[in-house]
Length: 168
Image 1 (cartoon, rainbow, N blue to C red):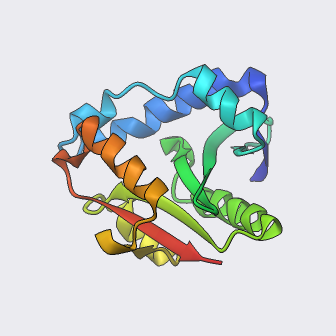
Image 2 (cartoon, rainbow, N blue to C red):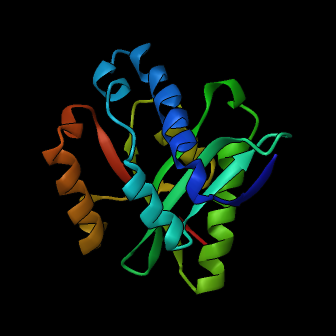
């Protein structure tokens, strides 16, 4: 699997990947997450223009997974990482996170951060296996607090969530 920067003309494909990956939430009783709209093409384009959007492509150079990130309080923050279910369980998500970690190191960022569901197997338990540690509320930076407030306003706190950090 090759990882490269996302191209603007691929953004609708990234939305398709997000919709397909979201279906996994329906099977675990989180249909609201499955039904959530993918990031808009404008939002995806903002990440792409900032150089913070990557795709994993198959042999035909078609994206099968993507990662978008932001800069939050001196760290690179995983905004979204999604793998099409047809390409899952092949280490693609890990490879995308490793690409982001390499970028963070090159920028001198000390860590990667993210927010995630604690009880979804492919969320917090997965990230913990990749070296992310949960943060207590007292450890949250102002930017992470802002992200968590926004998530709560969207209703995501209906299910247990956490912030996680991976030192680089």
